[in-house]
Amino acid sequence: MQRFHTFTALDFETFTAERSSACAIGLVKVVAGHIVNRFYSLINPIPDHRTEDNSAVNGITREMVDVAPNFQALWPLIKKIVGNDVIVCHNAEFDQSVWNEQLLTYGIGEPANFRFFCTYQMTGLSLKDCCAKHNIDMGVHHDALDDALACAKILLAENGSIQVSTFKGGLSSVMKMKENKKYERATLDAIDDSQVENQTTPFFHARTVITGVFTAYPNRDELGKLLQSLGADINTSISKKTNIVVIGSGAGPSKLRKIEELHADGNDIRVIYEPELISLLS
Image (cartoon, rainbow, N blue to C red):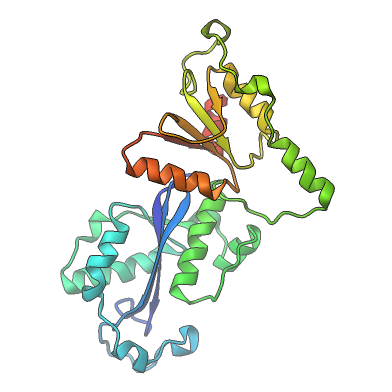
């Protein structure tokens, strides 16, 4: 299964049955597994011959789109948000065809320059069923932004990049979870190179921070000791000196923001999610 941790989720609503009649767009930009931007706009659709519209489905009326900008007017902002990202949709065949119709009609871009990925093909489940599977609030179906946001969260959940279920349990469960996130003092001490049998992994001599919850490694200290045995210098906070951040579900928002800030300042910090972690350790 392909995994993307940086992408833009897209959803279109159309005014009629014609794929050219885009009347709303929702975009959700994800960077390093973290939602960083959301965009929504109504669109004045390309005219067609249809007399029936989709107002009963998406609630968008002729009066609403008559005063909206067309796709060409929105394109500079849309292009800036999407950039070179993979575009992720739930039922990409539909959204990609709507996208291509806009680009070709207005002559503003080459469809072949954009890559699409389909979460429906990946899961085989409807948007509603995917959201139910991962306990995601899907918002209002056929609202372009809510659908794009749900799509983004589905891919993140399938990738293991966000917590996929709400926590259930009493005080004892809370305390146990808190205990599982603690390190023993020795885990935070760097070990001598002579104790590292495998010095070929990315963790050798790497300042490493662990954040979030891991299905395969529920005890933070045990995972820390495992990476320490590979030569990692386990740290508890992210800084310019950090080399690797290992991210599980429900990772701390402050740590995710810190990664973004350091990346923006040109610091080369490698982000490793649980699927890649398991691959590296196996």
